[in-house]
Image 1 (cartoon, rainbow, N blue to C red):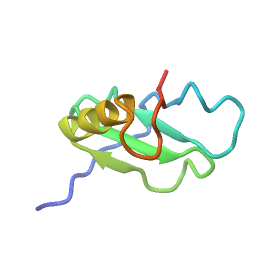
Image 2: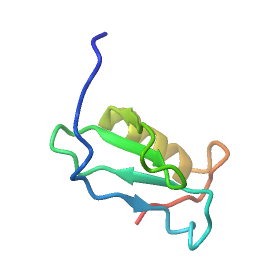
Image 3: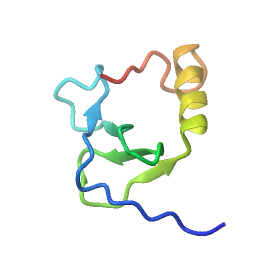
Image 4: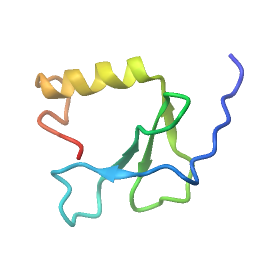
Length: 77
């Protein structure tokens, strides 16, 4: 599968509503024109982000909301 290259310099990042002022949180950018979803570590925003297909990301979020996995109850604002 070929590598996907997309600029994340102008995307809007958001944190989980459960993060508050904690340092250990993820940021999500789901407003990327190509439809992909980017996820990064808020402590290291200049490091590479993980890129997800929108369907894969939606399945993950649905599983979390349904109580599956380690992060049950996490929501993003």
